Length: 111
Length: 114
Image 1: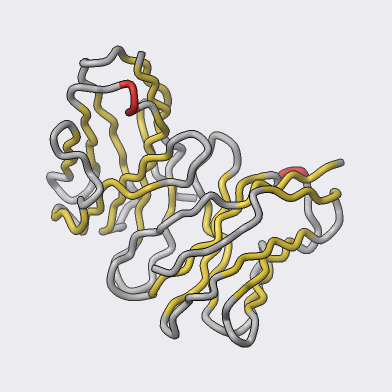
Image 2 (image 1 turned 90 degrees about the horizontal axis):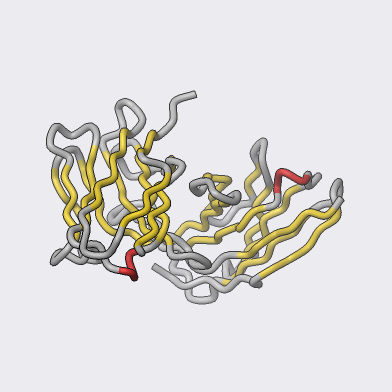
């Protein structure tokens, strides 16, 4: 699985959009970008995933660059409950199904 | 909403003792995973089951760790003997079989080895 690079920490004001970047310059054509988050003292939670098109669900939006070497997770209206560690993971959809977590980005939402 | 159950939530033990963790996945989920998360790091896969069979245990320290899923439902992870370096969060996750699998994680067991 390709490696990802994320900033170790970010801050965002409550009510504003939180934009979390992820670099995955060695991503292969059949690898997807997944985002999970882990709120303190809880297990990780799936947020969203995509291949090359932008994706949106009730939690967030995922913007993947045209060359697929980077992506951005957008939380449109951050709340205090969005304070968590966010993990960007790149993996194939088939075959080995394990998730390879990096260090993630610690996002703090400030009131 | 169905959830992955884990017990105990917290465990304190002394080194050289045996410990065991239990996981009950979401009903119908054929794939079960055990991850270990050291403080400040992301989770790392220890073992993966497909039904009752081990699919991947390449990162499981087999000299002291064992895992089983006898009937393909719930699972137990055991450490014997525990070492100071085993202090970590042990997370269980489950997913449906098939090529796409959103993994659902349990709350974890926080192990402290003294």
